[in-house]
Length: 330
Image (cartoon, rainbow, N blue to C red; front, top):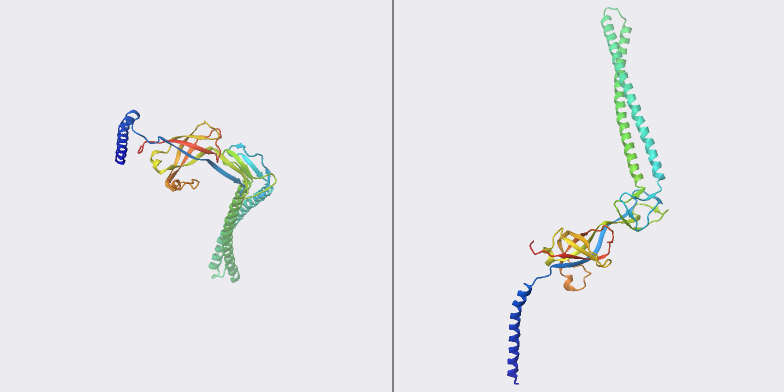
């Protein structure tokens, strides 16, 4: 076969193959419908939960009560630990004594004010009498009915009565100021006692929410203080999966959409979840992805809230989530 014949035969084969493809495409579309993209995507991530590192605040003392070990499920407000509170109780006793003294001082100053006010009333009557005596002697001195000495004594007595009234009126003002000061001291004593009551309450460590004690970091007799971790508490009633959705699929997922979650730990078991959050900002694919092509792809972070009534899902556990893609624009 000549070279020209071989070229012609190759061209004929290509033409026949192309005709066959053109013929098969309508047949395939008739039998199976138009080609479609993926109807769901699978995203992967790790289970996360609210974790709280618990420690004593505002107090420093040895631990005297520590009943629970790691792995124990506790209800909210359960007492997890106590420290030696004798110092703080004694301080509270001192506060109560100071409060009683301040209260008595208010009562004493109130009595002093009443006494000073009664003295002023007496002074006014005395001054009125002395003024009448002086006026009478002044009218009679011209006729010689009273002596000059009696006149001078009446004048002096009236002046002394006026001065006594002014002095006792000033004492009334002082008594009122003393009451204001005593009441301020009483309020300060009450505030100090309430503050120390709060401080005493800090000697007891309680669970802020129901959860599982994931880590116990202290022992009986250890010195506890601010920032010294005692327990790490996990809220296993509310767990979620952090995952990422490609930018091309973002328009096909919705908040509240149901999601099926599976784990390698419990193969074949499906956990029910829902999309609880979709980030409004794009990110690069997490750096754990090794290929450059995937690393530069923009993704959006989502959070899938998962029902976990049996507390099987634990923080850090890898999981996969199957998300049904909605038609674009719906």
